[in-house]
Amino acid sequence: MNRNVVFLTVAFFVTFADQLTKYLVRQKLAVGASVPVIDRIVYFSHIKNTGAAFGILQNGRIFIIVIGIISLIVILYFLDFLTSTRFLLLGSGFLFGGIIGNLLDRIFIGHVTDFIDFRIWPVFNLADSFVNIGTAMIVIYILFFYGKAHS
Image 1 (cartoon, rainbow, N blue to C red):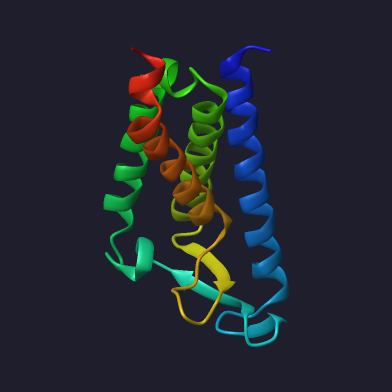
Image 2: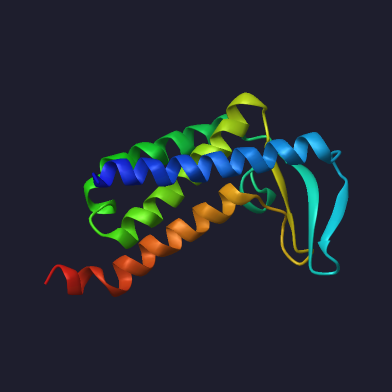
C-alpha cells in the first residue's frame, strides 16, 4: 500500500477517535463535571480549554490555530522523510491526526474539549496523547536510528 495512503489513514483514524470521544463527552458530561473511570486513578472530567498544552496561552485561539496550520504544513513538507519507515509513518500519522483533532475544536467550537483526568496532571484528550506519542516517536527515531539507517 502507498505510504502516503497509510499516513493519511492513520491520521484519519486518530482524528476520528479524538472527535468521537470529545463529542461523547460534550453530550454526556456537563462542563466541570467529573466521573471516575477507575476510582482514585483516572476520571473523565469535562473541561473547556481555550489555551494550549497545560493551559498556557489562554484565549490565544487565533495564534494557536496559526501555529497548528504551520505545523501541518511543515509535516507535509517533510512527508517523504516522515513516511520513510513504518515507525516514522505511524508517528507522523499520530502527530498529524492529533493536530487536526485539536484544530477542528479550536476552529469550529472555539475551545478544545479535554476530559482525561489523572488528577496529578493537567486534563487532556486523545489528540493531545497522539501528538505527544507521535512527537516522541519521531524524536526517538532521529536520536537513535536515523544515523544508523542512513550511514
